[in-house]
Length: 168
Image (cartoon, rainbow, N blue to C red):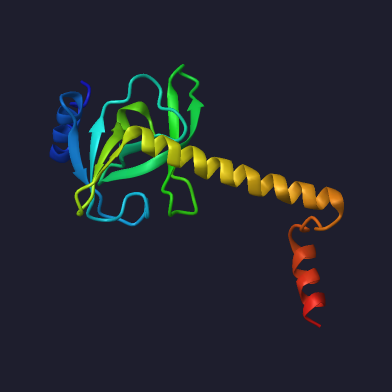
């Protein structure tokens, strides 16, 4: 006899139901997406159509709470499905990969405490600008190393030894 399937927690079930209809509103409670999504602002969720894209801001259910983070990578799973890796804009480490059933929806509108709406297009433009700035910084670093104006940082114990010798 198989174990009965667990019913989704009431909060997740309500969010899934609303997200499939006209869109569910969720209040952001942490600083993980600051400054784009400060605590207290509300985000409207819609079910993503197909596989989420890199740069989308997604709401995921981690088993205890709803996280609103940006998609940084989409992985193909061995079972021909996909996994999505997210990270908050204000976080250093990415989250573990999420399965499709853990993704509640994508953020398509933002309501701040001061009435102003950020449309989906603005979220995508912001995401692309961040990526472009990161690529530009990396490219400038490579160019400076090629020109001999910056040395490549050694890894591991060699870096620590170099720092000590510079301090003397």
